[in-house]
Image (tube, rainbow, N blue to C red; front, side, top):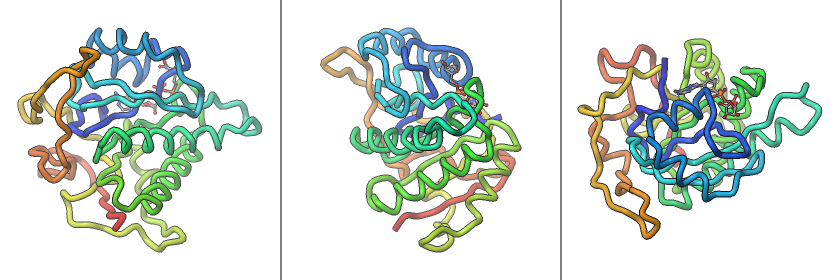
Length: 236
Ligand code: APR
């Protein structure tokens, strides 16, 4: 299974709830891996509206930041769910790029407890990420859609193989840019770089963003480490 908490990217996205005070699923996993400092920081955010996104530090995570977003609960599709889910991906990327993040990883927002049909959600994720990359070609180097299960990966791969208005997803050489992650094995702390840490004026720990090209543990498939093909695309 892909575990977003183990990825050495600049920012990971959390599928949270409007209270931003933790939960189960990926929310619970991120809070568990980040440590109690994350909840302390979240308490100061005053919650988050559905479709919106708010950042915190990564605390004990490998990622420098966590972008908390709140996906829509599935109510049959007639209550603006698709627009709200697209907004989660778009706003999370806007917030992450605003922080200086060059690599961002997403879970499959709303497809767990919130019951969003996985195929429809995957289509929204891929379309929104690709649109953002085309609109902001120099804004970000790497977007990872973490496949928590094999069926998630199959879905993302099929969608990425399709072409969109700008033609097929442009492939870059492995290691330079990834738009989909395989069910990555857990990157142990020993193999993933611990970036220099510091503190912000708010006392929250931060790490200097590491451009994806410097990552010593590339997200792309490494022999024996990733079980499936990793897709790469380049916005430029
Ligand atoms: N890494 C990557 N993906 C994960 C992980 C993980 N460690 N754990 C779970 N997932 C996947 C799930 O398989 C699912 O596809 O994340 C997706 C989102 O599922 P949820 O975590 O249930 O999130 P969501 O459906 O958006 O519901 C949010 O659940 O945990 C609570 O506080 C949260 O109230 C909020 C609600």
